[in-house]
Image 1 (cartoon, rainbow, N blue to C red):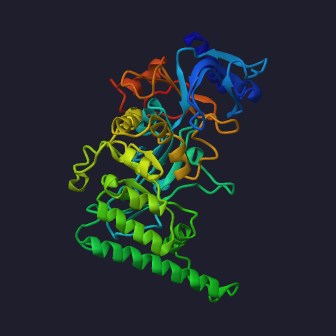
Image 2 (image 1 turned 90 degrees about the vertical axis):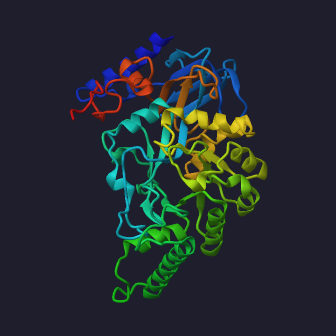
Image 3 (image 1 turned 45 degrees about the vertical axis):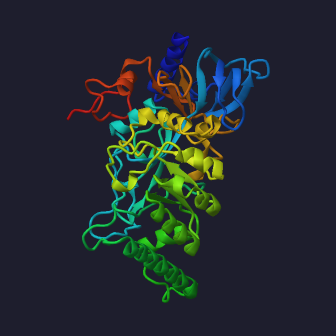
Length: 441
């Protein structure tokens, strides 16, 4: 079985090497059928003895062996005894070493982490080894607004421009990172209290609304159009709902402050971390606001996270609120992402809800639910192959596929290094080429 997979990998590499000499796109994207697996579609019940067919980077068929027609020319891969589920979606990661805002001001919505991500950072390889196929890469949380996030797919490519998700017009997709609580309470010009933190945020949104009024009043009169303001433009995207707010928060009173601000200004928001979610689950559900949880907040060391508990996922689920999980990598290593959901099940969350919280729910929180998050015909061929149950500590990620390309293969010693560690595992990777060589320091 593994030899067949290696043949597929060899074929793809060979085609990549000769693509500059002859045109072979059809061979590179031929149909591949994985047969005999335990499939976890997420948007439907598990399928035993299942078949997953992919072609041209998309899922073309999902179902039982007796109901799926496999194309005659498809490459057949025997996946008996293994589990296939959608690629994991991480709503909050810091892989790539990126940063946005600096110490000059507490609110800097004009900067973007897009401009500071290192695609050769080893974190991306570790994420693939953990089954993560899409991530919301964040700037830090030391500001009330630390800048724009970027949604990254771990596809084959040599630059960040090839990895980012884009809308139909080609614009990079991402959210706005905000934070409250102790992170942003520092010496001036940063606020020293929670009350002043909220006041500064209100002040900026009011300024953005005034900027929009000036634009509308100017109409087509170039002399009346206000000078371009990148910060105000970004905030208007937030207020117009085209840019999601991803909000760092822990304590229950800080959570309620965000819900008030959201009600006041109408922006869309995902609550992140939410250590005290179990205390205000009904209020979160009533607001219709989703939460992205971290259940192991160490080595965060925050006093405001002292009441974090495994039960938050189950409590929010029972209250009717949408739930996802995230790594906050390195806070939780991307290779251990599956365990986050397993801990939530231990704390009372349903198995089905926990699986969805790793896949479809976070995809929806990033406005990508129509493309990824489930094994659904027409969606991108992003999936993970496991050697056991997703929530077993003994289960390993065998392969990670992105856009129909094999991006991690545990049987390959070069990829295995990223999964298990050892000499060279933390070094940057030279993207591109066939050998995945390490860059020299």
